[in-house]
Length: 102
Figure 1 (cartoon, rainbow, N blue to C red):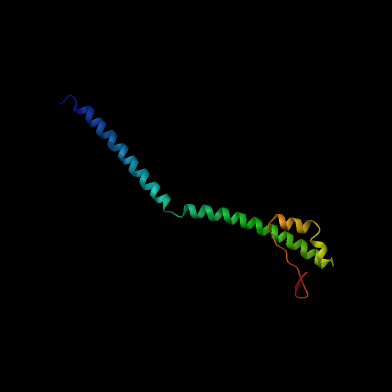
Figure 2: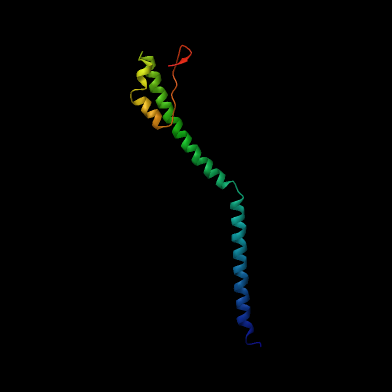
């Protein structure tokens, strides 16, 4: 019976080490799962998208402002590239003239 004991002790040590590694991985997975990591990743991605859209809108509004300051006709603005670029970007341009949408 003593001849088999060293082999069994080696097996028990292997199982114990595997159990410790599994427990450590479970603790790490639990901490990552309940952390704000996923929220931070998702919000940073959304923030980048919104920042890009804001830059596009700002450029379009600057172009519209320049056109209006140059004395251009408001209705012609929607027949050139400004109107089509705004539509492609999902931006709705409303120009008011004398308290009405022009």
